[in-house]
Length: 177
Image (tube, rainbow, N blue to C red; front, side, top):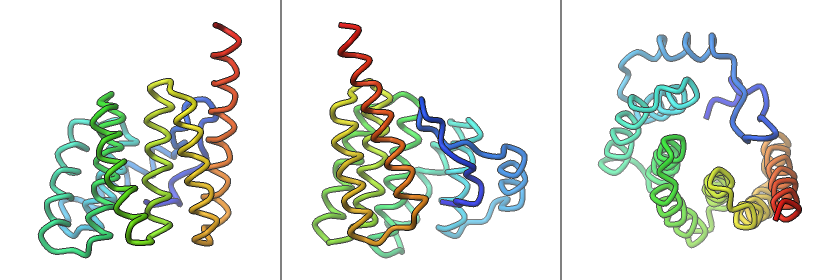
C-alpha cells in the first residue's frame, strides 16, 4: 500500500500513523477509478480514515475484480487487505481464517514477501485480540520471510516494532496474572 502516507506505527496499537489530510486528498483524487490497483488503494485509504463500511464494500469489490481477471498474487493481496478491514471491524476470527489461508497459499507458492505480508497482518489480528503469543510468532515468521525476500528496511523495522510490542504486552499480561 502507499507507504508514502505512512509516517510510522503506533507502538501500542501497531496501527499506521498517517497524514489524514493527504489520505483524504488522495481518496478524492482516486474518485471512482475501477482498476484493481485503484480499488486496493481506496480500500486502504478508507480503512485508515475509519470509513469501515465503505472500506468493506470496496474491499469485497476488489476481491471480485482480482478473482475475475488478475494474477493469483493480486487476488491474495486483495484478500489480505479485505481481512484487515474485517480486523478493524472487530471480526477477528474471520480475519484470522482469511489471513491463514492467504499465508499458507503464498508460502506454498514460495512468494515470501506476500506470505510475510499475510503473517504480519495475522499477527496484528492476534495482537488486537490480545493473543500476544501467537502475535509474536506471526511477527517472527514475517520477519524471517521479509529478510529472505530482501525486504526494504522500513518493512523490517515495522516488524521489529511489532515483535517488541508483543513482547511488552506478553510480559505485562503475565505480570498482571
